[in-house]
Length: 300
Image 1 (cartoon, rainbow, N blue to C red):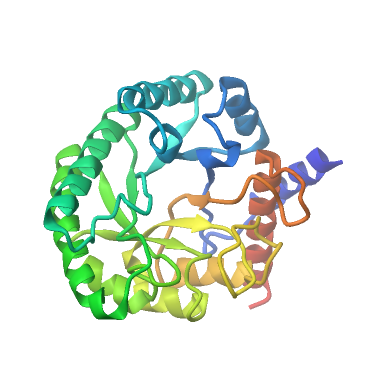
Image 2: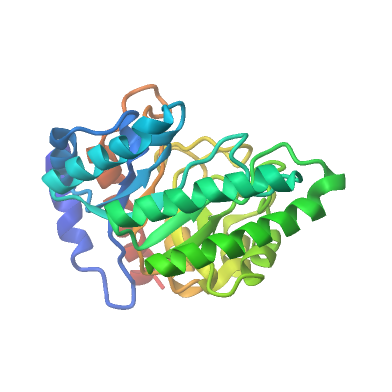
């Protein structure tokens, strides 16, 4: 029955009018927890997942230095064997791997780590986008201005590395006290470094509305992280398990941001009801979103 629903959704999405731009669907490799197997990736392709975002933390965080590149290479080999395409790479992040820290020596080390990760990622995966966090947290109000300037300086350095690799660098909006927790602050960061884009995470703007974020960021949005939440704090639920109006999101993303790239899902391994989040469930959610967007355009 679920496969019949997916088949019907695919047929309906095929008749979306030309005015309703349709993106393709992808998922973060973090959906599988550990590095996915070739069989898991092939099944995802069968289920309708067309792209992945490589979550480098799966190969980096808590991994001995000598094992990091081999694990990244293992990820590449499995992706290639499955025939899965890479849209983006999410560069590693942690509380300590922060490109905005006040200590210049530590910041230089963190920037060097990210530069190496960019080069490795481009060598292995040839992504179209790189996603970078501008900071970790907590950040005190008294230090925010300094941390913003530090992040901008670090991004300038990393943008040069990304340019050498021929890939677009995108800075992700983040929640709570992190840098980039409002569209205005994130626009300030990216506009300070020409041709840097924004990765819009639908879970991370908790101080305002999604329509406002898209309006403020506009065509700077160059990739997205799709997931649902309760408008209180990030939840990373599958779309339609929270409060986001997904048809309106698709409309605004198309009309106000001109976005026609991959809709990259970044959802938890487990759904709101505790069941496992599968690639098939991701694909079904995506096609429901397309159908709702289609119906919105028909009813205009």
